[in-house]
Length: 417
Length: 206
Image (cartoon, rainbow over all chains, first blue to last red; front, side):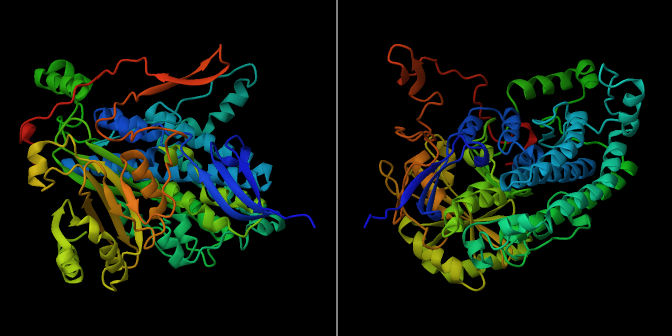
């Protein structure tokens, strides 16, 4: 009789379902996974080491490149850590802007997740739908910061600038004539807030569309229900945070439990799962779409009626306005010092965490009083989640590994750092 | 977190850990304790199992190299001549509080700390990372391999004496028709110099 041996298979790093550069070494018994050994680090850029050699401000754009689908939330944790050590007050309007863009980013992240997850499992249409909505939100990013992806919009002490009063408009072209262009520009006539409000009014219908496609879909349920079950106790021991932990039925959300910025003034609900399988995590994230939409609406209402400064007036930390800089010697010196030497952070250590779309994203910052961080540790939620892939995929079929990678919402920018 | 809550937490920590606790500081609303390297496993077990503390999650674990931290600061923080430390960030989801533990490794040439993988399985990869980047060895770790650096990498890149350019670079060699490693050809350069100001410069209270 022929000898039956386990089969070791290499999955990735060049595989469409590997979400970038995941290399998995799978030990298989037939089609059943006995052991999964993720090899990471193929996208390692030593962000933490680079940050030790840059001034605080110069590292803000590096944060965008960590989890490159939720850029502004990464910046948020970083600037919060600096603000904590500097003990600088952030103007209330800047806090509302941050909360609004955190939630826009959450929708952006979840849209990419639902698109990629559904594509992995076999539903092509979701990807196209998700990117249609991402386009509008990318335009919000662009209007406010000038960049569609890597915004560098949050700065220590506030945000880079106030929300613009106009939206960029489409121009007529060979493909779109005057009349069509006018129709495309119809929701871009007003300010950025008008544009976002228009989006929040449309978005619940879109989420309904996604749910129609997936929630009761027989194939979708066959691929997700009872796959990768994690008990609440095990989820905590494995370091799960965010939707991964909530999917297991633990009501834990930093926005509610340890509120930062103005989340304590905002009304929203925390969805939790029951069984802790991939399907519950899917449902949790779908409900987060609706809750984020609700938070954005509240922020818009507040921002409309409350003008004010958006960055601290301490010019030792934030640059003065261009006009002041050109007319006033002292402001000139501040500007020069900030952009050559940067500001100094008092010695000490702190840990600042935000509720990232993927889980708890934290920055552990150690300063020795210099203009550069002494040590910057980035706590990426995906790192702990991917570490649990072995346990979650054990005993499942090889095709379920793809569903589990999808449910973990893996992005290599943050895992490899 | 409120100060009273932190004081209560500090009190329960003193009660639970006893003489294993060798230092306790509160800064910026965060609690930091110091523990000896040989005590970390038993201390962690107590922190997880104590019903009031109930630290059910290890949020983060990282290495740190205090080589260039500054003599005054090292003196103030009692680092003495010790260079490597492991920093644990614990979170209790049940009781909603956080804690930071600093464990200084005794030996600068061969830093060793006990592994906490058996208490929080999430520590597995974090310890591999600290081993990879700082060369801290975790005794009792089931699978201590490099994690982030390249296969066959030499050195511990996040140590303060490791140059940011690294030691080797990689290129394709047309003659040998394969990718080869060679010593780095770029010069290290500093774009913005590192400046440490005297105390209370610019009215920023430390």
